[in-house]
Length: 86
Image (tube, rainbow, N blue to C red; front, side, top):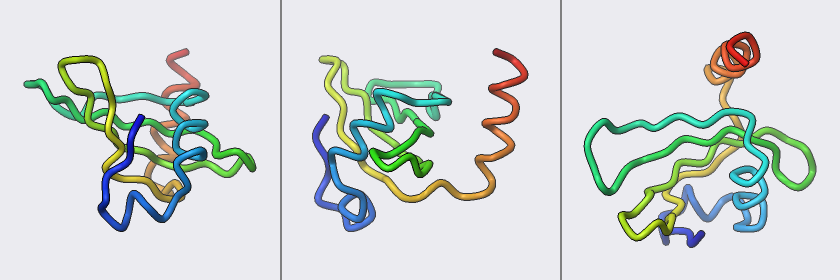
């Protein structure tokens, strides 16, 4: 997974983004039509802090991180829903 040059994607180290995507607790596709598709992942960074990562999933299967930051409280509800739905 590559990361964009946008400042918000650079605030989180790429290794932490990869870890969160690889070990995500929640994944949601944000777009109905594509490619490219935007996909939200919520997962732990290497230290265990929850972060949110949005990637663009390209038609060739590669991903480009366009957004990464510490998880906002609004995603707590999404994680609880994911836990209930299994």
